[in-house]
Image (cartoon, rainbow, N blue to C red; front, side):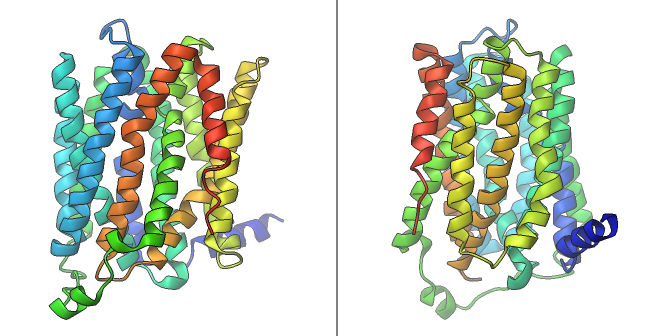
Length: 392
């Protein structure tokens, strides 16, 4: 039994290029410092800062607005200059801006630097998505993206758990750690993945003219609209859910960090194996719809009034399973509609969907929670989720 399990893991992780692994290691280092986002709302509403939940929701709306515009520009720059320089610039720039944001105390400056930080940070994503496609082949492309997500979630688990401990003593230190991990990831990319080893392919004007624009692909635009609805609900997990855990359920920061870390641990243990077993068996949209439904169902669990610690744990596990089924195959879907010439556009639109959701999702959630309570918020998101993603 142990040997069979080991062989399954070996097969799931085998056959991926060295560059794909290097990109994932870089992402792991970068995301190990992911401490600001899950604790930003708690930081802003802490006694030291003194802002309201609605104020924090507006800051996250600006974070989403910056991410939206940054993703658009990142996709344009990736198609024009290649994925390597865009990734390198945004890693170093994001690191500097994380540290700077931590020094801001006035609400206006926090808003400004949150927008700038998210603008630079999200410009990284289309370039990174394009790089993964470049260093993989169609037969292992979904697993290559799953490996990258594995690195993100392992980093998320480590960052959330450590971030909960750090936040208990000093919220400002979170910004320093996040900044230095960004900069460390930039140095690793500069040292390990210099473009001299494999150059970005330049396309002729005829190839560029013949390629379909992602912004004119109607089927893809419908897909992007449904992803936006999904993501608007999903972002509650990182913004309003920690506040609910703290203020309504009275969980401590270390326990909240542990709950957030469980999400990354479940994904790390299960996702690559599940993608390996499922890839190619059914259409991507089948897995996406199933995963989205499970995430929606997890919000419904939060309205159960008994055993809050157990219910919260179950909710995080169910979210993780839904995420595992939906998100890797979302990447497979958008990739299937793109080519080498326009991949940056398709990656940018996919990233922009998440960024747009991050603009209004947390803010809308904070308004509902402030006016009607968190239980109404969770029921609202469940109803929206349950029918948001049954796409042909």
